Length: 113
Length: 127
Image (cartoon, rainbow over the protein chains, first blue to last red):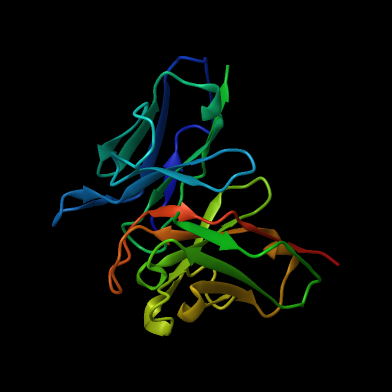
């Protein structure tokens, strides 16, 4: 199985600030034949189901504010949230869908400082 | 509106069986893989596997090795529903179970993220 790790269990950021969440995979998620990274980011607010934010590592899901940006390739990926708002309080998960089982990272809890 | 609606919460005793459901609407249900994800209390997300409603034979099901033999996926495409069932529950099965739609439309290719999620079904197993 591909193991997904996230650099922080939790992160405290001030309103209006920038949050950077890192995710690392145990093997490359870049498929050479189509040059796509099989990596998604999800947001889970308290008491809610997960919500897809980013797929193919950097493609924003429809309706997701452009404050959310995904980057990275291969084994190292980053979710950046700029102009942090109170509604961004949530746990953020990365997930690889390169190889089944499609494993999730352990999650990073974003707190407002 | 595209949505997945899951069945209500269940409270069961160890050793009992249960079957929970996930019903789709607002899109062509049979042509998208559906995934199941477990979330134990206060913990992260665990991928259980996927099912293709238009072919719920063995070729249209993929279990995570961690869950194979412990749960069963099934589908009834005539009513746009998929199911997750246990034949003998354990206390360690206590969790919220989510279904989610994979974004791509293909019977043979399922390497996609999940863009639409159900609200979750809480299964509590306690004596």
